[in-house]
Length: 487
Image (cartoon, rainbow, N blue to C red; front, side):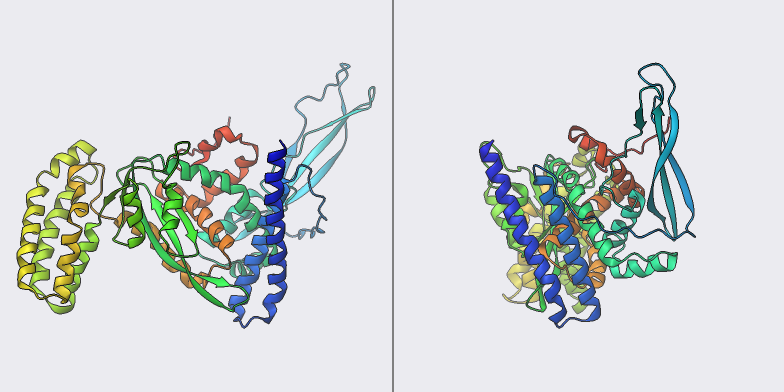
């Protein structure tokens, strides 16, 4: 117990220091040479990070920290209101007499459906037994933000707009103002930070589920990250890991890191692992980025991306009208024609069909070797051929296993929407903000993969999460989620 107390205190001290740094950065931001949009994004990031750190500290404290409750703004009278009544299940006193209603407590929460604000009036009646002077009242329902103003619907809207529709909070502030109620972006930022902390266990469960699969895709894309105090950004990376299109478990997990170092991949996969906690073992489908190479030395099986090999020859043909490129594309086209025929088949059927692809792959391999002897070193054609020849075993590994895809396009399609996000984010305000964004995007993009409407999914998750035991957290994973049915 003493060791656990010391461990928790060390984390609290670390988070307290981080909180102090965030406060200093928040007040120092005014002196930085940022544009108005950059400054706005930085301020909302700092507010979100600060709220997240405070929520983590409070969760670690043995006793709740006494916090000064902010004065709640009175919700506008003109907003539509919907009453939600809460009464005790039993209003008969233990003495056998019926209790009498003597009053009620009313709490108003701000709800939002796209374009429309409404107010939920939660009315909790008070019942008393005149004989025993006993009072009963329905308890306050747990909420993802304790005693918070927003409903789960409003929180879901803010998160989906920010992390799926790529709307920064300063833009959402303007949208809400047009809908009839302005919400300060600092308030929105606090909600985002607290929701990030509450959703993290679900993201951890999704990651654990992903790492139970035998075949994974991996890819990475650059994202600018701000260095407060320097007034400029540097290149960070959003790493993406997902199951294959053939796997009934549809999941994608994003991991934000401050560099492109291969150690980030190994950390995510738990490599090299220990006897107590073995690292992930399986087939990893990637492009040829060197950061993945160390994983293959630790027992991971490399699966190459045929689309990357094809792309080299397509560039030769498209840019230079190369006859070599044109002939190579015919071979690649034949391989992909077979894959399209069995895209929705089971593993065994797909493996059987790939027996027809082997002679095509062998012919392509032999043709490349013959062409390479005719082409001088250093040319674009030589580089295209060398790319495939050096990686031929990994590129054709899919022919021996029906579970493996021919290329890495599935994960590239998952990460492509991030390009739109980059234009709107301008940058990630901090490492913590980047990781929070990656976590929420993991949930909403996994929801999309499973054919769910992300807003409806996230709203339901935020409503159920506060009361769901940790042992049942898996019920809220996107590939297992089902909406609650009334009655």
